[in-house]
Structures are given as structure tokens and as C-alpha cells.
Amino acid sequence: MGGRRRRKLNLRGDVYVIGEGITEQYYFTHLKYLKKYKCVVKPRFFGKADITQIDKTVEKLLLGGVNVICVFDADVSERNATEKEKLKQFRQKYQENSDVLICDSLPSIEFWFLLHYIKTNKHFSNSKAVMKELKKFISDYVKTENYLINNQWVEQLKQFLDKACRNAKSLEKCEGGSYSNIYKAIDKLESK
Image 1 (cartoon, helix red, strand yellow):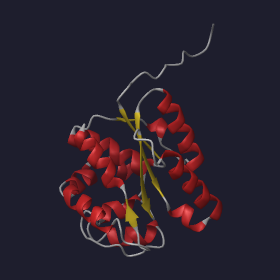
Image 2 (cartoon, rainbow, N blue to C red):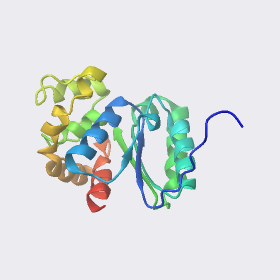
Image 3 (tube, helix red, strand yellow):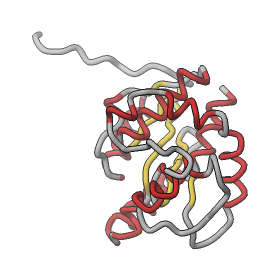
Image 4 (spheres, rainbow, N blue to C red):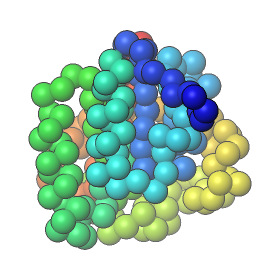
């Protein structure tokens, strides 16, 4: 039989971080290295994915008996009724599954980065608005692969990781503002 051999997932108990884009991919790749987290972060589990694609990846990984951390921006679901319904169904599908951890941010992961410096639940309309505020603390931050591939920006954020977790947790019950659940991923990775 020709062709590629398919590797079978048999990694019971491993933690896989999957997500939506290169920012999430590089952030968790750098954190894994800098904090010595025991998790799997692979480029093929990131990309311009929507909730439907993320759900398919989760289903496939769960067949291998792994734990899955899903990291994505919730801004599209705020602007699009169809995406909002998909996100609602995705959350409901996995809310009782202890092997799946949903870590979304509104409007984007940059809000999580901002929480490393300030405690706010201000409603930011989009990631550009958050990035404008974030640049007060990381002046050279840009959402390009050339920037993200270098781990210095995560090294800088890492110094304030505990503060970001505290800020995100304290804002969890606030309604109507921006939010990030990435602290749940950090808590899980810290406990491994």
C-alpha cells in the first residue's frame, strides 16, 4: 500500500492546545518552552479556523484520549448571528466534558495580553482597539509572524502572568465587557 502512514493518536492524558491563529500558536509555543509546560502545541492545530473546524479537531483529538484546550477569539460571534449560534452550541456540547477546556477571549487574545498590565473589562469593539491600548505597555507589538516567532514578547508577558490570571478571574462575573478565559488554560498547564 502506497501513501502516507497515518499515526494513530494514543496519548491518554496528554494536553493538546489548539486554536484559531498564529498569535495563539506562538503564544502557547513560547509559554511551553519558557514555563516548561507539558503540552502539545503544533502548527497544524492552529490556523484560520472557525468554530466548526475547531470542533472537528476537538472530536478527532478526543478519540485519542487527550485533554484539549481550545483557544480562540470570540469577536466574530459578536458580529455574526450564525457564528454566535455555533459558539453557543460548541459551548453546550462540551460544557460537561472535563477533557475539553474552552478558553475564548473577547474581542481577541490581545485582551488577555492587556490583562497582564491592567485590570479592565472595558468593552473593546475589535482587536485593533485592544492593540492600541496594549501598545502602551508593549510598544513594538504587531500581529505578524516575523514579530510573533521571537519569544521576547512572551518573556515580557510571563513576568505578569499571575497578575493576568487574577485580573481575568476577578472580571469573570462582569457582564457586557471584554473578557478572557485563557487563565483557565494557564491553571490547567500549571497543574500538570
